[in-house]
Amino acid sequence: MNQNQLMAFFKYKKRIEDMTPVELIQRGWPFNIFKNPTEETKLAAVKVDGCAIQYIENPTEEMKLLAIKENGYAIRYIKNPTEEMKQEADKQEDPLCFYKGK
Image (cartoon, rainbow, N blue to C red; front, side, top):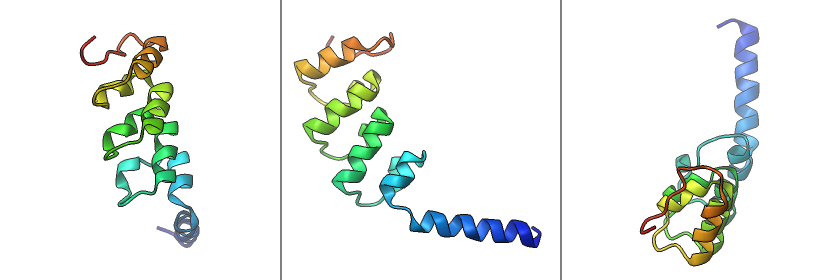
């Protein structure tokens, strides 16, 4: 690694260290790398990728619905989805959006 590459690496590393978990998720970092995520981080994750709901312990109803709105396939990771959640998943055009018990 030459000096310019090394300087660029450390500059990039510093920028990452200054970012919040929400900013990292919005830039495509996977949700499941964060330990003890905040509610804000969890919400950001399901807004970016609905299937991130599978990594959230005891998600709120809001998180579940946001996940399904982002990706109807996320309903597969939700235990006992409500009728509203099932209807939202049915709105998705993706033919793989099946929920348990349908």
